[in-house]
Amino acid sequence: MILLENVTKSYRTRLALRGISAFIERGEFVFLTGPSGAGKSTLLRLLYRAEVPDSGRIVVSGQDLAAMRRRDVPFFRRRLGVVFQDFKLLRRRTVGENITFVLSLLNLPDKEQERRAYLALRHMGLQHRLSAYPEELSGGEQQRVATARALVQQPDLILADEPTGNLDPERSHELLELFKTINYQGTTVLVATHDRSLIEAHPARTLVLEKGQIVQDGWALGD
Amino acid sequence: MRHGAREVRRQLRESGATGLVAVLLVAVATTWGGALWLVRGWVADTLLARGRPASVVAAVRSAEAAAMVCNALTGSFPGVRCSASRPEDTKEELARWFPELSGVLLGLDAASFPSLLHAEVPVAEAARVSGWLRARGEVTLVENSRDWQGRLENALSSALLIGFTLTVALLAGCGVVVLLVVRLLVLEHSDEIAIMRLIGAREREIRLPYLACGALLGLVGGTLGVALLFAISFVLKSHGIAIRGVTPLVTVAPLLGATVGALGATLGLASLPEEP
Image 1 (cartoon, rainbow over the protein chains, first blue to last red):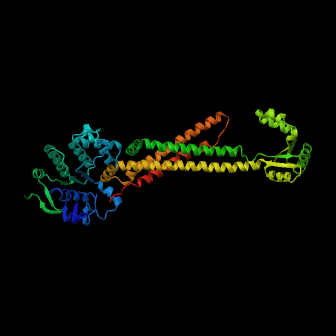
Image 2 (image 1 turned 180 degrees about the vertical axis):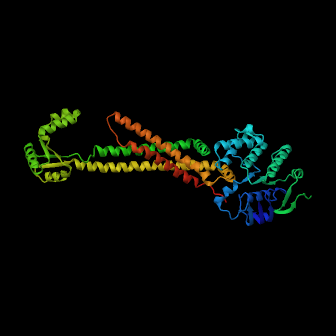
Image 3 (image 1 turned 60 degrees about the horizontal axis):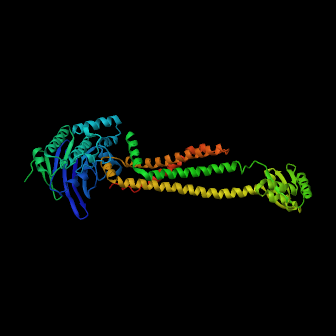
């Protein structure tokens, strides 16, 4: 599902990722962890092709991202569900419109868009906020809307960048359970988090990044 | 489809007062341009009607000479109708034309006025008849309606050129306003556009609502312009001036407005940064 081969990415003089290699199989649930600045977000940005690596190869769902033509990028992204650290909700649109926007890109009929948006929000316990604007929601609610938006198109791969950063512990565990459920149904899930307690509570394969390198890849977190 | 319409409505709403300025500019430009076009048609149909016989007027030294020249003219040009008038007739006719001066004019000596010769000439022969009259020693002055029409045509062409240049300038101004509207909207929505790209929107899906917004502003302005033109032609008709040619403008003006709007929006969208 995801193949990283000797991937390097730098920003001016700072080296964010140093020749990392990894393979994530279809249907896997993987945590990506490490301290702030370790390169977690950079790696995710490379995976949803918001950036291209300086060198190395990234293959997602059989597509080489570095070689991907610009016009094919939107179609690639439509098969991903990305939960962003800063939510990235469309602030001039209601909660419902934020969700139906993604579905409108798939050319679904309006009624179907509305039905799916309602179901996705109900799944997140936010069906009553359908007509609210993002600024009217709490941080946790915004995160749940962002998650609903990522899940509504039933993606092959979910990339989540610190999805529990704005949630209380109870909600965080609920969200992780949701990701696990989706994973059981066959969707590959990659969650970037620095919250070690979350990883300990939901054991899964964990890639530990430090200073742009994978220092650990396994089921148990070292000290 | 409904989503697209919603997006366009949103852009239109957010274009606000500046968008309204663009609409008004197109309305003024199309009304002005359309009115010029109609005036041009009206002048061509009435004042410059080519099929109507030309009039030639000549001043002759005496009434007797005028009658003699008239006879000679109809002898040489059988298709010409000619009449001669005495100085007294000229004085009375001038007094009728300028009633406020009639007291002065009628008090003047008849010898102060020329004897006139009026000829109605087929258009094709107007120049030859004028030349024939100028060659006669008894004739002191010849004026030909075709010459006047030529002068009028030249003056009208210059006025229309200036008028249409102003129309083009107004339309260009509208294009610039739409460009600014779209540029401002894009600037204001830059975060949102970035998010749309991240969740899989294509460039076409991002740009189309802005483009449609620009085109719609122009279209509304053009339609408003046509409505104004209809109102003007209605008012003129009620005053006995029949104007033809408004109907073709029903299509042309909105299309022109939409094209200008779309062009402005396209230029405005050039400021949209591309993805890496």
